[in-house]
Length: 327
Image 1 (cartoon, one colour):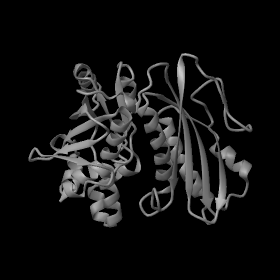
Image 2 (spheres, helix red, strand yellow):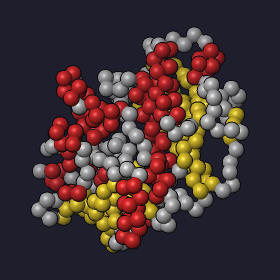
Image 3 (cartoon, helix red, strand yellow):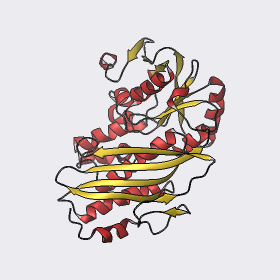
Image 4 (cartoon, one colour):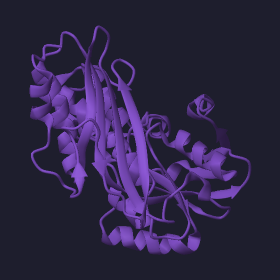
């Protein structure tokens, strides 16, 4: 990596101003931040590896940085939390230029600034291998208000925010490599490269007494399996109620369901809430202009997920057991 002076580079990425007071950030051996006793701390980490989690042909350095932090912010949102700080560790290929590394930090800063997060530390090193970026994010949630996957109960409504399958659709558009098609599907590309974590929705949900929640990073089926296993219940999803964007249906209607169930990286929130509280939640979200869909219900069981097809037939699905459903 052609960074001539490590200390000079640190000055370039060090924030000029901080969103939070009482903070010792970049510039010392470690960061220090104050903790409010009324809150519980949330800490999460995500690592992205070139050719495994992203391709240089579909993600610019800016997009890599943005998405790496957005994934962590989404995890905090899924706990009902408020994002506060982040740390970044990057292994940069030796042939990268300093300008490319700065682009990654530009993407990180853009994502962080949207939620008033401060960069408080990290590490950068050169490698003869592929790019690796690891982001640790820190947030907070009011004591006793954290949202867990283990809170689902029989009779609950299963809900999901936004639309599903867009990120996978955007990746498909980019992999096609057709500039005209890409120009016609800029919305799907944005959903893949610069996802929007549902922090506001997570905060709304944290005010309810019992909610189970997960973010859609690995696909709807995977996230529902995690909730159903943690809560020891079954999930029943109606395929006809899964929300899609018009852009996705116009691009590839045939693959929309598959991408929604297994594509991942939409970073929407999926969870459960009691029938009684569903009406209140949906009314709040309508007022706040947050799209939210009722896609199924929770039943007694042992961690299974079922999908009802357009013919009314139920089929059990698992992380890898849905081929027959699409046939």
